Length: 65
Length: 240
Image (cartoon, each protein chain N blue to C red):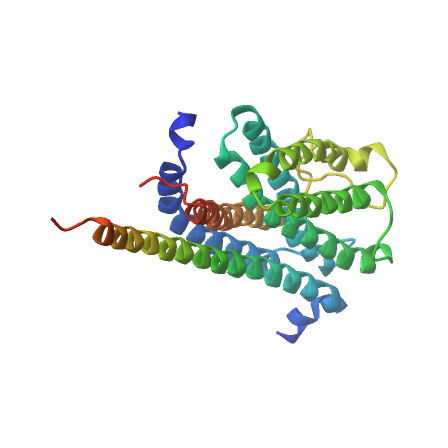
């Protein structure tokens, strides 16, 4: 097992290469997912806001006969 | 056919349906590629164990160019048909391509030091890939420089198209100029020149990276569509 991790003496080059790729690709995935969720949540809150405002407007501007 | 998918809502319905499959297959293919590359493939007769950097480096380099080509094609479609979805696909792709280009440069450097005795040389292959990275960064900066992304779309699409001249330069740089970088051994006129034991992990990693691009691309595209809806809602321009 330790022989595997030693990579024929090139461990200092091989493992950083795999680590950098893993960290960057995983990091980009997490950032993309996070910003997508934030934006979609904002869309929802803006929509419900607008619906509520419209409902308020109709109740206040409609004169009761 | 194309116009059916040009509708963002319909496009996203299809994209969301394939997303879990792409994500699952990404994990499967990358796991298989890593297993084959790290445990089952032999060390190179010249390069020893450092050849294992190839299983990250070469598929990343291929993705760096593939994603740029995809960006250039969708930018051309955006310029011709003026469809916002094409712009969004290019915008969603750019950070993923920049990421793969950076991985290519870094893993290449980590491979160059033990094999060539240097982290970096200013030769045609390395320099042209560095330029590709700067084009990606320039594109991302340009796209984010406009408050109203619709105004930035056209210059960004033009930049993406102009930058595409770099792609054949990267591909053929190892044939046109003297370089430390080895010539093509996977995509050549005579077919692959490397052993199947090394070709399989490469193929699995390349397919896995492609699936990663599709998966993360869908997430980013959803983010782009949501951002456009936020702008519309804030401006009070949406109907119904």
